[in-house]
Image (cartoon, rainbow, N blue to C red; front, side):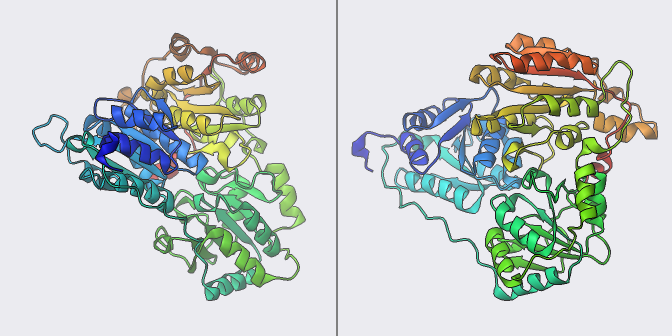
Length: 547
C-alpha cells in the first residue's frame, strides 16, 4: 500500500483488522477512533455501539469467548481507554482473543494524554503501537495474529499524529495457526499408568478443554472417570450420565462428595484454582493431582501437582487413550454412582425449605425460570451475592450456553456480557442474571438491548443492598447502612427503556414470564425479582477467603 491510494493510516488500520478476520467491533466512537471505526464498517465488519466504553469492552470479550474468534474494541484516546479498563482487565485475565484499538494522544500537553502502554501492562494486556505510516498496517496485522494465536488481549495504540498520514507499507502474510502442542510420550505414559492405577478418577475440564469433549469423554469411558468442569466451562459434558457439572463453590453436595473422594484428579485445560477446588478442600489428602495444559507455565501455577503434561488437551486425551487400549474399565462408574447422579445431580434435586415473607426465594425463582425458559439459551451471570442461583439452578445446553465473566470479580459486567453472547449466538434465547447493584451499574446498556432488538430476558435479583457485604459483615455486628438501599422499581426503569417487565414477589407472579414467552417477544423482558434477604449465599465464604 502506498500514499497514492489516498488512504490514511486510520483507514488502512481499520481495513487491515477486518482483512485479518475480525467480524465484530464494539465501541463508543469519539473523534480519535471515528475514521478507523468507519473503515472497519466499510470493510464489512459489524459495529455495535455501546453506551459506555466499559459495556463495549465486556460485550467484545463475551463475543470473542463464545465464538472463539478475535473481536475488536474501538475506543477514543485517554478517557475512552480508562473507561474500558475494567472490561479489558477481565478479558486479559481470561486470555480472551481481543484487539483493543484505541486512539492515543502522545503529547503530554494534551488533556487526553495518559501512558496507555503502561495502563495495558498494568492490567495484563499486551501493548502495540503504530509508530509511523510505514509500520501501521503491519502492526495492526500483528495485533490480530497475536490475539488469535496466543489468546491474548492486545491494546493497539494508534497515535493521533500518525492517523492522518498517507498509509504506506503492506500487511505481511497471515500467520497460520500452529499445530496443536504434542504431548511428550513419557508424560503420556505416566498419565496412562496413573489412570490404570486409579479406582476413583475424576476429570475436571476448564476453558482450555472446551473443544475436546469427545476425546475426553472417550478417555473417561476407558478409565471409568467422572466428569466435571470449572465454572467457565459449565455445560461441556451436558447429557452424559457421568456429568457432575461444576466443581468448586457451585458444586452440588453430591459432586463435592464424589470429587473429594477421588484418588486421582486430572485438570484438563484447567488450573484447579482456589475456586474450582474450594481452596483445596475438594482434594483428598492421598489423591494424585495431575494437570494437562498446552502452556507449560500454567502447570502447578495455582497448586502443587504430582506431575503435569504439557500438550494440547485433545491431542493428549487421544494419546493417552491409545496407550491405555483394551476394554473400558469400571473405575468410578458404578451403578450406585450412576443412580446417585441421576437422582441428585442437579441443585434442584436437593431438598430445601423456601424462605417466605413477601419476597420470593431465589432458589424457587431460578428453578421455576429453568422450567419456563427454552432449553436453547445462553446465560450470562453478573457478580454478587446472588450469582450462585443462576449459575447452579439454570441448566445450559452446552459449553457455549454459559458466559461467565468473573476472572476479575467485578460487579456490573453481566448485562454487557449477555449482549455480546447474544450477538454471538443469535439462535438462542439470551438470559442476563443480575443483582440490583450490578443492574444499576450496567443500566446504560439497557437501551442497547432494545436498540439491537434482542429478545433478551433480564432477571434482576433485587435484595435492596450489596448482599455480599451485608452477609459478610452483618453477623459481626457492623453497621450496614452504607450497603443497604431503598427498594428500586426496576420494572419501571425497564419500561422506560422500552422493555416488557414483570415484578415478582411470589411464584404466581411468574405467569407474566410465561405470557411473554408465549407472545411475539417484540421487546425484551425484565423480571424484577424481589428476593429474600435474610439468608446468605453459601459460596460467600469461598469468595471472601480469596480476598
